Image (cartoon, rainbow, N blue to C red):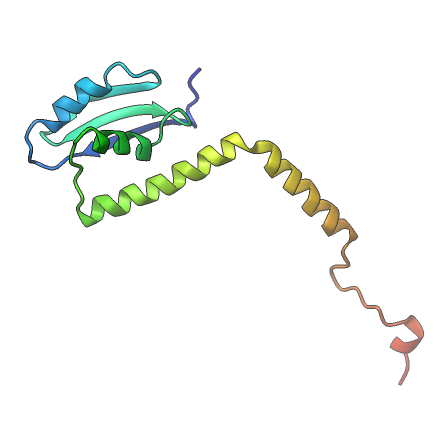
Length: 131
């Protein structure tokens, strides 16, 4: 079952050498469940659509590196990948641990209810008027 909020479309960027990495990766990734290869982008790019939490960009790229592929490591691509890795990791954690988030919310609400807050003044009323 696919959900729009868990579906991601990402571009994988490879180095120019060795040549034809995008086409080789297309063949390698073609039959994976919950992952669709949408096509190549130029000679060095591959467009994929996948569903969280089955895949993350980090897992896909790590698997490709493990198979001997060479990713584009320009500063911009490293920064882009790092941000995507972080966001997808957090989203996957939130998807797999909703009961912990709810429990934390309830605990916080209980503490807040029992905690004195606002303009509360512990001074007795007769001392407030004392001059």
